[in-house]
Structures are given as structure tokens and as C-alpha cells.
Amino acid sequence: MADGKEGDLKLLGMHVSPFAHRVSMALGVKGVRYEYIEEDLFHKSELLLSSNPVHKKVPVLIHDGRPICESLAIVEYVDEVWSGDGRPAILPADPYERAIARFWASYIDDKFFPAWLGIMRATTEEARGEKVKETQDAVQNLEKAFSEIAGGKGFFGGDTVGYLDLALGCFLPWFGAMRMMFGLEVIEAATAPLLAGWAERFGETAVAKEVLPEPEKAVAYAKKLQAYRASLNK
Amino acid sequence: MAGSNDLKLLGMWASPFVLRVKLALSLKGLSYEYVEEDLRTKSELLLKSNPVHKKVPVLIHNGKPVCESSVILQYIDEAFAGTGPSLLPVDPYERAMARFWAAYIDDKMMAAWNQASKAKTEEEKAEAMKQSFATVETLEGALRDCGKGKPFFGGEDVGYVDVVLGGLLGWIRANDELQGVKPFDPERTPLLAAWAERFWSLEAVEPQMPDVSKLVEFGKMLQARQAAAGEGN
Image 1 (tube, rainbow over the protein chains, first blue to last red):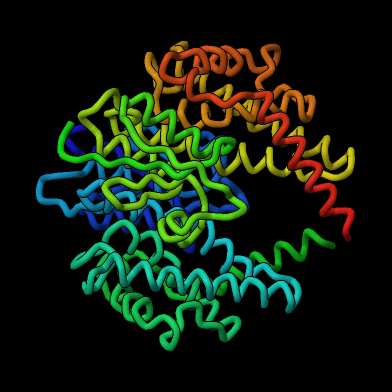
Image 2 (image 1 turned 135 degrees about the horizontal axis):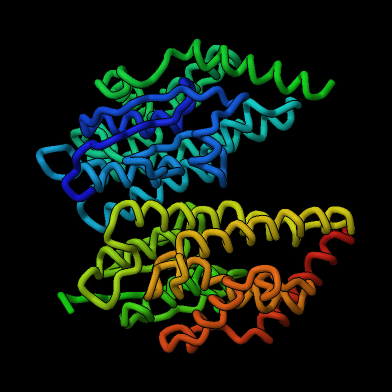
């Protein structure tokens, strides 16, 4: 794989999965072609189940028949395989900057994501209120992180998008969905001006425009999920 | 060694996450200053170095802090690439596999163990133990299929996944006594049981491992504290 040839590349994804979008965007940054396979997560394919038997989740990147799972591990894989040849790097080169990027990606997955997802899943006003507060606290931390990491530039990655831009930017369609469904602004310009500026800027990039769906699609999927959960409770 | 490498590790003796970092530093042959933190009265240095989580471990390299054990491990591997063995493999696919299993250990296996320790009723406990064991069985499968008969997750030599799992071994042995559970039962997960013995007895590992009887004592103290807090309700 060291020569970076594309070989046989398949991405198992779902049209509103932010984690799958991280991978699509990473492949887009690298200019790598691949076959995209849309999974129906209510009827998972044999290929998905056999490629990710542990989690049975998307995304899965299958490169020359070998599956790679977990979005951040896949993004690092893509960065390592398609490096050099004038292709943009996704992670920074400096070990300390890489550590900072990995730290915040972990934070996004372990703290930020469960918080805003919790807003959508909350069944009581009280629970929702708690998750809103958690989300706001996380956004404040990310705002501070952006000011430290971007160093006055437009993206976490500097002049161009990098690892953290993909790790966080993938959620923009869902933030749009929450605006539409709850009138809730996850990244408020008043309290997180740098992130708000970044979000707009990221949304205008070629990779985001190519990959990220309209928020309406996320809303439609959320409704489908709600209906499914309601049917389970009958 | 290139340049000034002022390394400081903020830790706590019973923390499995701190142990991971100690093991990595030991395997790489790196010297460092160890600072024991009292987690009930955290130092200014800890609070300043890890303002987001206020947790150990924190590795401070030439004054710059790195937080989160798996991030620290990868940092050590990259910043000290020329020193000692590599923790992560060279091949990108194998690196992705290593990252996958490290994430599994933290996100699934540890989460299941934490659930089990929180279980209040016998029924809850039994269910949690079943979930826990399922994750261990999955890991046994990983060692069997990815390990392919090699002594470690990293192959012939210790690697990233070995260190991520190895950091937990002290508590795994302590829990045997605390909860009467053998997570790496030689009958049910023979490869993991053998791996545990092999890993613990490595020259670079053994001196770093905690005193299991002290962990048991600490565990009992934590259980008592938890029970007392519960009774207050």
C-alpha cells in the first residue's frame, strides 16, 4: 500500500452519517476515487456485517478487500496511505500538534457528540436542559481550542482543512437539523464567534459542499428514527 | 538523545491510564520525572496542564502538556521515534487495526467493566458481567485472529495494544479478589490469560506494575466510600 495506488476502494456509509462523512471528506481532500455504498441501517448488508462484525456500524472503508473501521482510525489510515505526491496532509506533521489534534478529536467524540446527541434523544424537558448545558460547555471548550490551534487562520488545520475540521465539520448538517427541529443553535455566533465563523467557512469548502447533505435530509432521518423507536415501544 | 528532553509525568499510583504511560516510557527506555498527584487536592500544575479534564496522566515534554493516555502513547512513539522500539506498527493497515482495538478496549471493554462495578442488584450484576465477558471474548478473538499465534498483539514484540491493555492488568488481578471475577480466565480465554502472564513478566514491565494487594485495599476503600455515599440518600 506504500505506493498509494487506489486499488479497490469501497466506502460503506449512510447518507446522513457524520462519521461516514468524515471519511468521504478525507478521501475528497486526498483526491482519491472510491465506490460509495449506501447502507440501510435498518437492514444491514452482508458486506457490512462481515466487514465490521464487532460494531456492525458505518463507516467501513474496504481497501483491496481489507476492512478498516472507526472513523478516526480510517481518516488516519487515509492520511498515511495517500501521503506525499503533492497531496494535502490531513494531520499536522509536528508530533505535538498531532497530539493536540488527537486530543480534541477524542473530546469531540467522547464529550461533545454525546452531549448534543443527548439533546435530540432527551425525553423530558429537564433531561434536554441538562444536555443543552453540557453542549454549551463543550462548545466553549472548542471555541477556546480553535483560538489556540488555528493561530489566527481560517481552519483548525490552518490555511486548509485538517483533521479537526473534518472531525467537527461533519456535524454541520445535524446542527442545521437541530436548528430546524428545536430552534436550537449549537454554535451560537454571540457566544462562540470564532466557531461560528469557522462553521460558515467550512461549509463553503469544496469537500463540505461535495459531501455534506442539506439539513433537511438529517431532519427527515431523525423523524424516521423517532417513528422506529416509537414502534418498538408499542 | 536529541536535544533537551525534559519529561515529567503527572500521575497517580493506582491509575491504569497512568500505568500505560509508565509502561510506554519504560519500553522506550526514556527517563522522566514522576509527580504523584493527590486527586482529592489537585496541584496547580495539573489543573493548568489539563484544564479540560483535570485528570491524570499528563505528560509534560519541554514544558508542553499532552493529555489522554492513548494520545500520550502515540505522542511518545512519534516524538521519540528514534529511541527504543516502536509502539505502533509501520504498515498503515496494521496501525489502523491497532487503533481500532485500542479504541475497543477503552470504549467497549472498560465501559462494560464500569457498568458491572456500578451494578446494584444481583440481576443487574449478572447481566453486566455477561456483557463484560462478551467484550473479553471479542478481544480473545482479536488476539487469535490478528495475533496469529504471535506472543503479543504487536506481534513478536510488545506494541500499542499490549500497552493499552497491559495498563489494566493490575486492576484485572485486583478485581479477581474484589469481585470474585477472573476476567482473563485460562479456561475461557486461554490466549489472553497466557498473554497477561507473558506481558507482566517482561523486564521493562514488571517493575512498573502496581502492588496488587495495595490495589485491592484501595478498591475496598473505594467500595466503602461508594456504599457510604449511597446510604446518605
